[in-house]
Image (cartoon, rainbow, N blue to C red; front, side, top):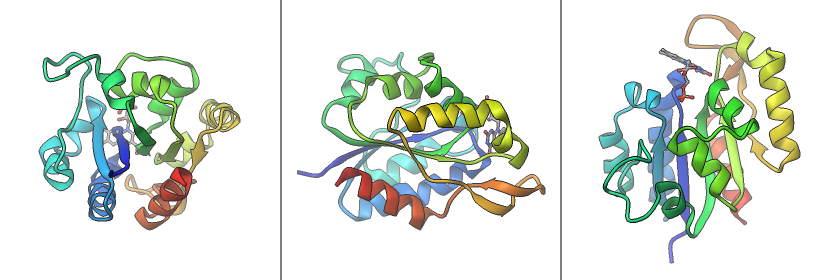
Amino acid sequence: MKQKIILGISSSIAAYKACDLARLLTKDGYDVFCVLTENATHLVAPLTLQTLTGNPVYTTSFAIQWREMGHIELKENAALLLVAPATANIIGKFANGIADDLLSTTFLAVDCPVVIAPAMNPNMWKHKAVQENIKKLKEWGCIFVEPETGLVACGDEGQGRLASIEEIYKVAINAIK
Ligand SMILES: Cc1cc2nc3c(=O)[nH]c(=O)nc-3n(C[C@H](O)[C@H](O)[C@H](O)COP(=O)(O)O)c2cc1C
């Protein structure tokens, strides 16, 4: 049976790169279910991800498509929750037990490994609030794929650019085994 991966996508400008990640994971035989935050739907089209994965794409808990509660249905038999890209906001929600959308609620519900690949402006990345949240999540067992250093989309330079899809893929697959 195919292993199930929940791919969480939040509203970083790097969200479009999640399409390549979804395609790669699907091509290699994983059953990929994408969960987009509502804001992420402004940056990447759910239909693109649905076409690439061959599975429904979820953006809300409150839809009649669910057989049972969305986060419960999603967590069943999940081998991995991979969040790429992860915004400062979703990291903050995870670290503080806030469950006010499908992705943050699913984070609390899963009992599989969690891999998080952040992407944000370098000042945001350096901010104590973000770093404290990451420290907490690491202590809880979440695995982070550190962002790269270089030029980010807004033109600033520093650490914050989403790690390469190859690196995220490697860390994700290792987390399952
Ligand atoms: C075009 C655009 C790009 C953004 N890129 C990022 C980003 O790379 N990282 C980040 O943490 N926030 C970024 N933001 C801000 C987040 O979208 C914002 O904090 C949002 O509330 C996060 O919602 P979500 O975590 O539910 O997706 C961006 C906003 C816009 C409008």
